[in-house]
Length: 163
Image (tube, rainbow, N blue to C red; front, side):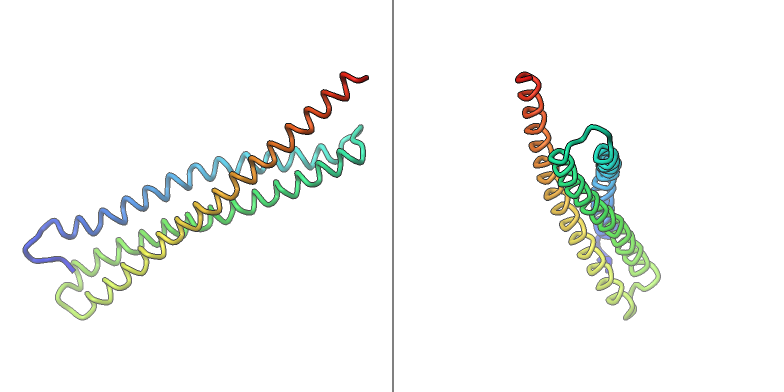
């Protein structure tokens, strides 16, 4: 795994997964914040639907909003799951490389360790891609919810002006 002539080869192989672990951790932190906000929004909508003074048209609107908020929460949970998996696979890749470079150097196990490291790192990158794509879709969904809420607010304002 480690070239005998380059003492920094091991470090370069470890740095890649370490940087990817950091990237996954940052995505995870941001996603956890989104998760809390999406849960709060879904709870608020559920409370509003059952509130007094809500007519049937507004209740139908709030029900659609709640279904969209539930989808947002689901997308965020899936993103959290794959970001956690990414961190785990990058950790596995790093640990496998260290074992292969130290304990298994010069044995047949060294090649197996390389394959495991490559597979784990590839899976981690795929997890980051999937989670990021899910969050991009969730962002668009969030914008659509905001746009619908703005339309409702404008309708309410127009109705209040009329009478």
